Image 1 (cartoon, rainbow, N blue to C red):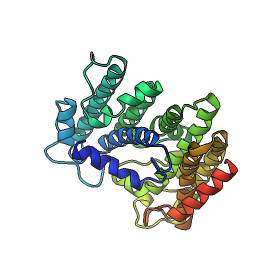
Image 2 (image 1 turned 120 degrees about the vertical axis):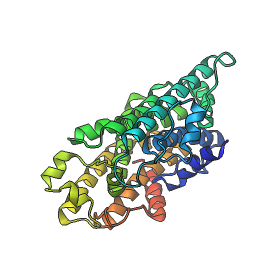
Image 3 (image 1 turned 60 degrees about the horizontal axis):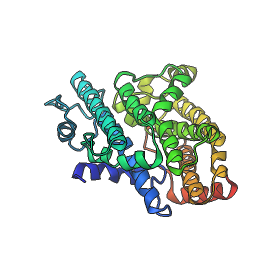
Image 4 (image 1 turned 30 degrees about the vertical axis):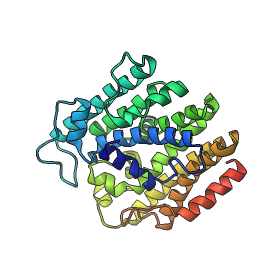
Length: 315
């Protein structure tokens, strides 16, 4: 694996939840890390966070090259940077096509060019995966290049169906336990996890020119965009964040019974995912809902304790 792919996978430790914990069988860990590697690569391409974007573009056969002058650390990306990111995402989708062609016609198809996509080939073959959830993750990052504000909560949840829900569906497919009921519960958990992450990253997202807090809620609580750029949160901002946190908690509560529908190590994994969301919400609450002063990160001991409780209760 090339160095940039390794750097991408190294980011797993910074997530709110355990990506591929030690207690899973080795095959499961490898499969989950392959899915994570793809999702992280796509996100880094869409956010301009690749370690070597020019090398990634060359590897994928993308003719467009990154701008000679990179985008500033703060503020929205330049039109040239947006164009390059969209070209990268197109290149990743073409490489995804190679994944499925190779899985269906081994020996006759051109193999994927990027090692993180090459790692998906055995998953597709072994678990009968479809392209749809992978394409949705790519599409979410295309949306990020053109949509930087969300008018309503429903609009934001619609975005989460692209950016978050596919990951949970892939986990269920890899485990071989997908049912319509489990998918619905998983979607609730994954959307909640995405909403919590948005709350943690308000300042960082604003530095990229994006706001994931619904405009209708900013207006409802009398919060201006300028207030979100302040070093600390005003009372109105705190009230808004508390409101959005409760929405995320409601979704987590709705999806948590998913844990009780499975057994064994998968149950422990799903308890860990869900507990990561609750622990992140607790961190936001502990910060007094001031997510501007510093990023609220979950306490690992609290996360472990919550995971144990969810595992035992099944929700």
